[in-house]
Length: 344
Image (cartoon, rainbow, N blue to C red; front, side):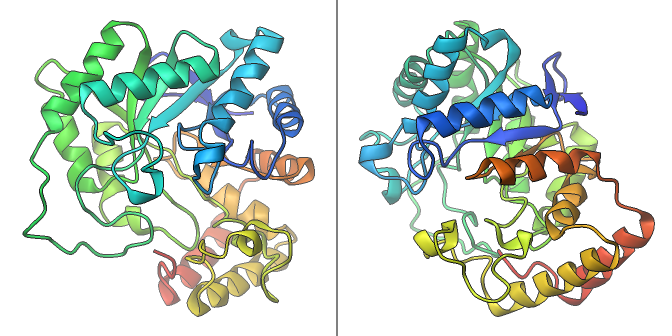
């Protein structure tokens, strides 16, 4: 395994992060345990979760993933061996069952953090992230930003950091991050942190061969301001394994939850087929090509991989040992230039 630190901290994390959003819905508690223990055996020390998980979000499974992690921690006593990241859900209809107040007000944060700590059966969360902005912006499958003159949101970046500082000072969270955030949002948080407030250390966004939009503006900020990108969906919900090239396979995430179709459009399939041809040419799996590409990016702090089977997890973690040559990287960029960002 390879390691780095959360930027500007002494928290050491593996370059592969174990994603967990299927535990408690697609995966059982026992399967969650098995994945954690295999990952730790391979040197992974970083687990990402969220209060809304498992996914898709629904009342009967809300918090189930944190409960799997928490019961494993209690059973094994290995809290000091893992770095845990979690998230508070922002305003969105799909999570209205979580709490009435879905903003990042102090009371909402307290409710979310205390309940996550209880489910996780721990005294602190290492990295606490805002799952998406309170304001309306282009997240979750939107390419562009359409301004709404009637939006009720008021600039509250400083107030949110003040609220988070309260929980850092109480020892409930150690560091803070963002998720599904834009360059504008990240820069505003960084500017406000200069007022003796906590500094954002990471941004968790979708990033993969079919969605490199953050290279347009966000990654420059990551480089210049020393903020780590924390990519999720590095395989495009399984699309970049190549298994759906001849149609959506049964009993997979995309067949069970067809609403997750952003990586299944005609251009995305066309690009995936080209990436598969490139992987075949160089005698590697498309999975390894896609994951190694993300692993090698200098702005990436840790690559969030997820799996519903142990065999998938083994292949995904093994990508850390794959190094893409300049020839392969040139081939990737040729495909990207011909079909740029087909999936929003």
